[in-house]
Image (cartoon, rainbow, N blue to C red):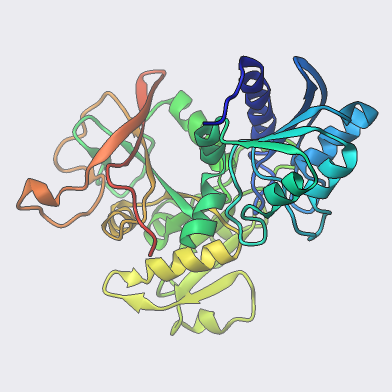
Length: 368
């Protein structure tokens, strides 16, 4: 069993905090942080800021300079071992003269997948793996999902009343939760690489689906993905404006699918409409690893039935809307408890008068 000291835990926690700074800007790359230290003394820090730019280890080694020799490097993901738009980080660590590298978890990406660790050990550097691995994997849940399952991590956001209703059924959509809950949604949008909605939501509400204020000049706006099998959504809809990238997803037989624009995607269909499994695979191939779905009850129900939801982000307002209001999701009537979709409460927070629940499937979705 690998031993980690209290100092090791402190430095890896710092590295994770550094990695978190890239939450809005690194996709399609993972979020990674690095700390270079001699004992308790930190001599270098860095995090990956954007795809195509230097990796976390490079920034930390630049700051440490000659002080990196003989030091320990703490990295939240295995150092890369291949040359892409940047150099291989394992070689930068070897050249710096560090004596030990502590890695939170191995990178399953096929061009790395243990090779970075193997190269470091071959160079005589001690490598210890597994410190705060769960926290590091949670930080890159989308990237890891795409690598391991060939589909993104999917977070389904919904707002509901105490009686399980999402809106009044009068043709006018209105927030049922308060200002603090609405502000919190912006945080989760900003962490996502794409925001997915359906044609019904766009036709009814004409939403922008943008992040109100990006966290930094390097932050990337999420791609707005509109599922519109019949091509009913007009190009004048606000979701297709120039405030953020957009992707119009239609059935492959729809005339729009013949467009040569990379902003239009044609998909196969099934009894539910568009083939959602194919959608997830293609979005993953585009580097959209972490999706937030903001949609009506039909698309929400279809995603749940297809077992494509990894987390429910549920805002609960302390009010009753009555049985004529719109249901939260459209699901087939169940006859037995054995057929229910069961979730585990992952986190609960109070936001003003409302509650925010994060729930995950009791049986995690498997690979397609």
